[in-house]
Length: 142
Length: 286
Image 1 (cartoon, rainbow over the protein chains, first blue to last red):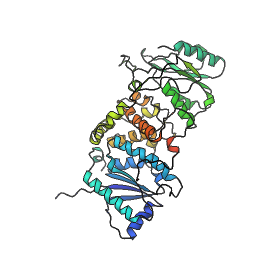
Image 2 (tube, rainbow over the protein chains, first blue to last red):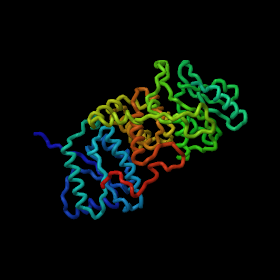
Image 3 (cartoon, rainbow over the protein chains, first blue to last red):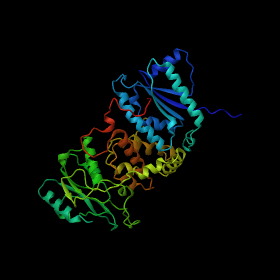
Image 4 (spheres, one colour):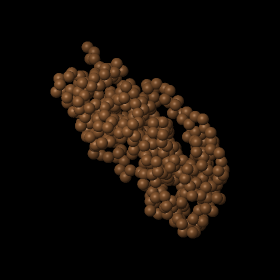
């Protein structure tokens, strides 16, 4: 029996807003897909593009970066730096053939548990429609 | 185009006056066709200096080994941008460098395997024939070229579908032997410890496999985003002919569009990733 395709998503969540937002979604008993594997980082500014490229190499179907809304960064300006870097990375990944739908950057605050659930649901749904990555790369990483 | 005489007389003047103790330039390579770097410390070596369209190397990489020593260097327009980059990033001091700038109509693909005199690909799209920074200028100040389409190669790639691009780059990266010649030759790659050689954690596995190669090539290019001065050296030295400039130039194009920034045009404008504008809209979560 064919098993339904389930995309693997790696999520990098800022400790101060998005991680707390995801926590709120949990404590509020909001259901959302379990396709996402969450990695907690101190700030979206901590997300080195290398982490994202590495995630895709290791077989991730999608990568989601979530951080505080601009202006709300715990470290005042980390997400402004992240925004520049990740915006460029997004177009670059698309250029090397990783569809733009596979990479998302979202601002989710600590009070937006509902929004967090929506973000993950729609991202997972988009990736399910897109299907697995057409690549020979991660067949080698077992 | 042969500027050898002008460069020799300038080098002689600088060395004999004691302004610098080394002139970095070019000499004829032993194959008799190409050029190779030459370090002149003694006035009697000055006659070995040459300059013509076979002088492809970007010599500014060598300035990083002579940070506190007064040095004269021969630069083409693209190389002169590398000097601005290195000053901007506090790697070299302007007052230690005497810059002999050369007006350059482009350099050729030179070597025993190619003596056609054909221009390098990026030179055909080059917009800058006069160095942006120099102390002495060799050659006639002329009109800058009028190239209507600066990035035809990049837009050509953008027009393909994601699947086609995926297949293209996977094929290219699969040939990489990870000799790191692209890094060694690049004036922007001066980290004392490159991420690719870090062992704990091992970001890039040591085996030569397509996935590892992709991480290396993607990150190498991305570390040069907004910093690449488009000298095409990485692509020239690549032993397996991966079109690395096609990656670098895409990032250059995007940085120009998003942040209105071009690397190495001056040494003062803050680098795009060390600054930000709170109000800017970059199409993220808006």
